[in-house]
Length: 231
Image 1 (cartoon, helix red, strand yellow):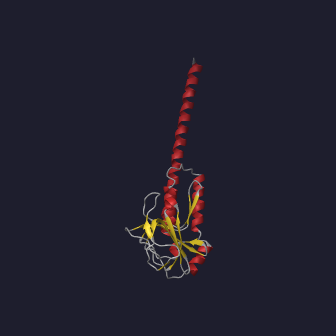
Image 2 (cartoon, one colour):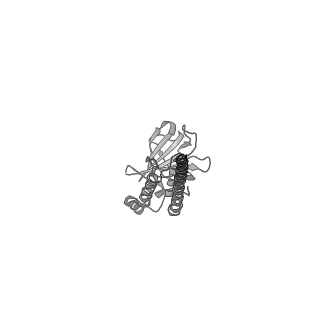
Image 3 (cartoon, one colour):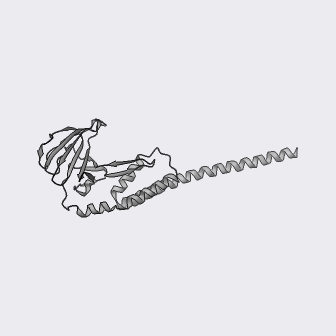
């Protein structure tokens, strides 16, 4: 009889210890998630003070990863490595900034840059590269040529609309996400010439994809064009 009572007593104690450990590990996992979110918020605040372009990239990463289950060890390492990478200014960028003429071109359209130039890294390891910038126009306006030049090509990219490429004296500019083009291949145009109508078959949104190429390589349009507003 006594032996049975002792067994029941010890089983009750053991069950209580197991339940306590389960609750403790559950709280620990929740605490890890909270710490992970705080790290991301602190990173965004610091990067916002350093560079608006960097912060917008981080915001885009979080926006595209809202359904991604955060891992303190794995994803925390990715965030730290990415932070080190974007805070290091490449020598190529320095050389571009040194040789770029201080006189900049006027913007192809007035609006807000919501998707910046360069590489975006996601928490799941994927990367994408934007050859230009994407601009949300302020009003119902049409994009114009930033400088006189010759229309090199007009390419129909299906759901992304038309892309018009113009050769200038020192650079090449590209105007994308157009539902129609006003210019023709081989046509010589002046600065301020209307390129086309904004709109795509993909989502119906009216925004401009704008690129600048130098020596057959895409460069950051912000180094060449005087944009008034950024994200």
